[in-house]
Length: 573
Image (cartoon, rainbow, N blue to C red):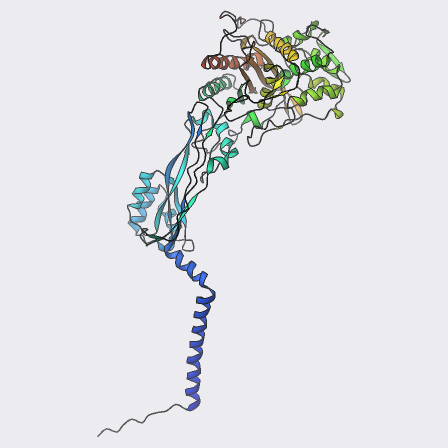
């Protein structure tokens, strides 16, 4: 008969110690539970939501940009972005390889992204065509999802790139009008908070959907046909003359609307990569010394002051004028000529003498009223203000050289706007990049009589004996002015680098368009504004006037252009 095992009882102190240890552990666990459930509820909720809850961004549709006739300039097309939640991803090697092929990236790159378990959201590929993104989802990889976005498309491509600009990866404006009107175009994204399973299927909505607010459409002032015409002729001239760059602006003189604006070199805004040096809107953000294109404003200043009349004679001597230790030169000696022929022959000496007849403040006041030294306030990012020094600091030689566009700097858009004074009988118009419903009221800065007298002088410039017969347009009277200036580099004038320009209007009897052309550092031995920039003006003006059905104001045989081997009136300042 087996004997019963004796029951071993723990000593009282051990039983108590064990009981205390158990109660202490229970108390710690209870305290931890109370802490987490009562004080860290948000933390636990966040961790739970991170596993199953998702906030889906509902992208707003960016507003469309169209030209003044409703032609598309910038539109948004739907695309899909593939993203993943690495902690939820389960993928085998075959799926990884297939996904990498569909995403067109290396398998190692996909693997690196998916191994980042500390992140709940990571993009695998942005802005894919919907049909390609759908093939990625057909792999049925848990933790991989799609997000609807929009990609910007620019039908005009590089033709209007500098004006329209482009958007970045997040569909935010980076350049041009896209940046200037970002708030208007972009709208506001919406959101949808849902619960998903590991396969990415939506189980239920957690809260009401926040509907996205789409952006507004924008109607620009430009005419796509005139824009293409301006771009084509500018590109042709820059290539023909082996120039460094060029710019052109076409304004509606009645409204101040920018009908076309182009630059060379350009870039494709649909693929804005490696665009350093090509994305600058030179017509608006760059400044240059305008040279002889400023002489009409000097003439307007003396006519307004009453010290000169169009037929007042000026002795330009042998084409030199010495002021202190500096000497001003004309390209050709003109002798005694009247004010009108100072403009036609582009005499630096004649312009300097007119300027020196005025007090510095009087000349500065006219320049200032023309908008020189101030931005045009068209709303374009980075508008240049130009450089117009205070008259109190002018020396006589500075006043003399500013008369023909040295010592003062402007943007091409500023110069084009200033010429609206002569087109509108003394009224300067505000510039608009957007289509306007009616012509804005401008500011009268000179008398109508002075404006008409100067416009008459500008007509002489394009006639035989002037500096720009190649600016003539068949069937239309043209008024304009050439400019040929040594380029200012690091504070010194380069002897072999020039800026050639021409600014004009037509029909001269009742101007409808103003076109300004600038060619930077033309080569091939031709650098005069009359030979390089004037032909661009003529080609664009001729076709643009016909596109707009502007009535002719001259007979069709009005064009008299000297032969290629004829000696032209030349200028350089």
